Image 1 (cartoon, rainbow over the protein chains, first blue to last red):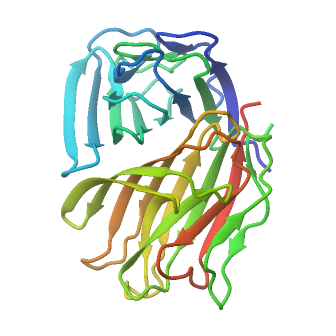
Image 2 (image 1 turned 60 degrees about the vertical axis):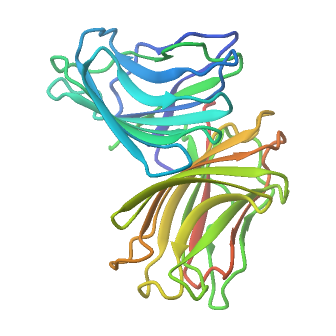
Length: 165
Length: 172
C-alpha cells in the first residue's frame, strides 16, 4: 500500500494546554490534515478555535463559516483582515472533534487555504474555510488555540501529511 | 509506515439487499476509524435515514446536523437508542441508480471517553427532491472501545451495489 497518508506529529495533552503547536513541519507532503479530539479544561466554552501559521500574528487571515445549532436554518458569517484563522466557534462544553485540511501548504508561490469540519454533538456543527495572505511561504509550523479556556488533559491532536506523489 | 489501512473486507450488497451492514471484531490497534459508505435504500420514498450504532448497544446516541435541501438550509438535533442519525440516503423513488455517498470519521474510537463522530454526506440525484447535503456531529455516550459498527436503514434495506469500507488510521 502506498504511504500517502502519514503521521507527522501527534500530541496528547499531559495537562491543560492553552494551545497546541506543531513545528518543523516537513515540506515532503502535498497537504496537511489536523485531527483533534478534545474537551475543555473547565466548565465554560472555548469561544473560537483558531489557527496561526509560522508565528504570523499580523492581520493576514480571513475566514467564512457555516454553522448549525440544532434548530432553525444555518448561519453563515465571515471576517477579513483577522489576526487568526478561525476554524470553529464553540458555545457548549462537551466531547468534540475537529478535522482541518490545509491544501498545498509547502509552496512559496500561493496564499494558503484551509477547510475545517467541527463537531460538538451537544452544541454546534460547522464548516469553515480560511485564507492566509502573508507573502507566500511554506507552512513550517502551526498553532491551534481556543480564544479562552484550555484543552483538557488527555486531549489528542495528530497532524498527518498527504502525498500526491 | 502507512497510516490509512483497510480493516476487514469491503462490503458490497448483493441482489437480495441487506437489512444492515456490519463491521465486527474491530481491533483497537488504530487511533481513528473512517467509514466510506455508498448506499441506497429500498424504502418507497425519496430518502431513508441511516443509523450508526456501536458495539450493538442501544444506549443513547445524539445527533446535531446542518443540512442543505435544495434551496433550503436547516439544522436539527436528535436522540435515539437506534444509533446516530448519520445520513439521509437515496431511496426507491429517488432518481434511479443514484446512491448517497458519505464519509464518517470516528476519532479516538478505542479510548475511554464518550465517542464523537463527524460525517459528511451527499445524496445528489439530479432532481428537486431528496437532494440532501448533511454535515453531522454524532455522540455515543458509551465509554468502551468501539469493536463493532452497524449501519442500518430506518425503514428499508440497503439495495444491491451499496458498498461500505472501513479504514483504520494510526498515529503510531
